[in-house]
Image 1: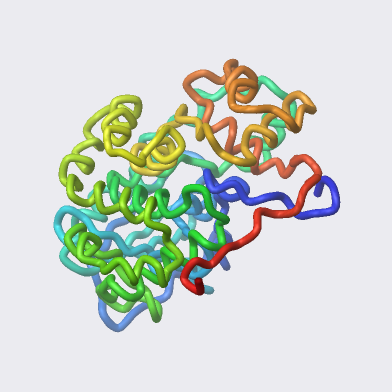
Image 2: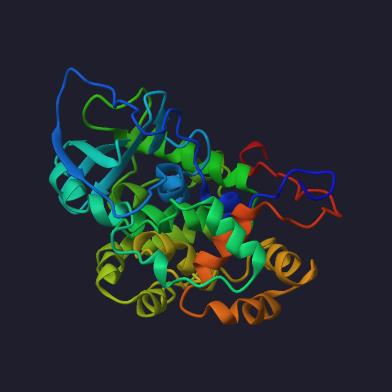
Length: 337
């Protein structure tokens, strides 16, 4: 740990995007449920760390759409083109086992390999710095997730604009629990599927306020859900084109669009610019410059062109962060005003 404080969360990955998965060591046995779902198995090539791969999809410890359980399973709820679905993934003996429930079960299982990084090519990455090489060596199971879904990453990313992580996570949790629907199948308690676009559009203004969401972020989400179908079509575009389409919606800029395509497309090169902490972390790790801005960060990451997002994740996972010199950004709960 650098300085007096723990590493600062950066919403691009929250310290590298590692969700702790209890009992995810080889041989962990997935829990058996009384209500079986559709099942698919897939054998990845090389090591796979569920917590690293799926961690960026988790929006805080109380995320109603994401859960890890003591049996070594990761549970996710999603609103797919086929309808809501619940997916449980576990590793056993190097084999990934997915079980899914609900109308979207088949859709989720069809895309299980992509979700776990099958379309990712970690061998294309060549470390240029000792710190990055060491982080890669220590995290051989890192693969970049690809959900194939835009809105489930876009809405929480908009909620995370210009506020603390705690405020954003609270807003996401509150809105999903109140306006979403229970996750299909024998999901863990209080797991919910995020609301449909029309439901988001009908949320009253005072409910946004109670959840701590200001008018600007609420208006951005309302504009996005009106064109949700067109935004979901962006999964068929390359990441650069997808970001351009997302940024046509007023209120969605490069920070938000990068956060989305990192998850929806598994983009290895989409760097989160405009982040409060990431430039300083990258600058400090690679050049000892904790005052680096976006331009300096991009210059330092230039040797990793095509793999800049992966390089940034490895830097975050290295744990080398600059000492904090100022108090944390204060939390302002507008729901209490």
